[in-house]
Image (cartoon, rainbow over all chains, first blue to last red; front, top):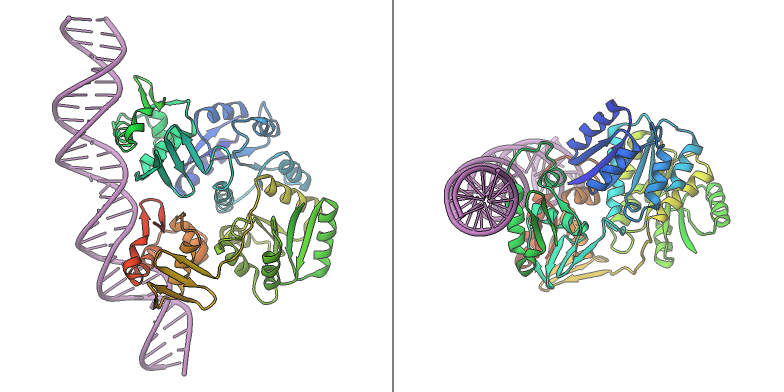
Length: 225
Length: 225
DNA sequence: TAAATTTGTAAAATAAATGTAAAAAAACCC
DNA sequence: GGGTTTTTTTACATTTATTTTACAAATTTA
């Protein structure tokens, strides 16, 4: 499941976007200002950012500059959504590092087309959405959707694959079960289930000798050692 | 120096673009129709394509589909420049595989901002076409539009042929149903159908013993083993 | 250390995706 | 227009994946 961060102070618009993104199979995260956006970025591995320019506090363009100067986040595509529709606004947004610019008002169809277009390209970019993730003896080739352990290909189910990809993308992070349910399952609630545990267990088993690179931190969650 | 291919039948516009691109440090190549565009692509390693939609002969959208289905050119970003400015035109252009859409008339500043934005995202790639694709026991002769399995010719329908060609051109890639619908059918939406499955099924059957070289990756798509 | 809680594990139950064949619709071709 | 082929849809069978359950093992807490 792809994560989309929406930074937009107008709650109605954000909700409308959220609703439509969910319908299209994305997981939406909403921040009402740029600072909250940065916090979410630290918590969720986002694939695209939708950025409103006129925000309370830290302005959209400032946020964009921060992102683009950040080692960690500079590869995340940003689509500006803004009521500023003058040509100069668009050009300056693009030149500051946005990947696209969507003038308000816009249709959901158009928004989805732009998000899809950008994510389609995303596969060939570097960085967070890297093609090949490697960690110890584990190799995950995202373009070809293949996983190797010590050079040997292994077969994973979709959920196992997404789990592993998330872990490999953030090798230093311990993910709470809630957060995993959020990022991968798209669940909102913190309903208690053993689903995550079951999937981690079968992922571990399939990773053979590398299985115990996935550690459980009691009362906290799972992550890579 | 970056190479930009302009496919545009209006010579005045093409010259204006060429002049401005040169001033900005690009090398511009101009084709007045899509067929000439393909020829230039074979000669020059292009980094971006500017594509007018209303062309004499082979239409812009057809050209775009060819590019996107081609092994050697499918990574080249395409910016559509067109007088068709309806929302539906833009959406369908993006969904067919364009990276951006610039309605005419546009300023040179805007064009340059869009080109720069797209090139910032990483390098394109060039290669050489193969007329005959081979994989395990399957041979596809594109020039003569014939397919052989273990030396024996088999008859495929058009859609089956296109599917097979796409798979053979990218033997390591798993294609999502969406992407196949996009590339081969030219469909816009992620509307749920079983069309792809049905065609893959009949393709498999016709490939006889080689049929199960086409694997399904659940929740992901189809590709070659 | 004992009780309570959390995690590991395997298997059963449920849900979802894919395979398949055939009917319906659309496109093609004299 | 009528017959043919191709494409799409449908319905159902089969396979595969996911979630839940139950209990064992480990860990934390008091």
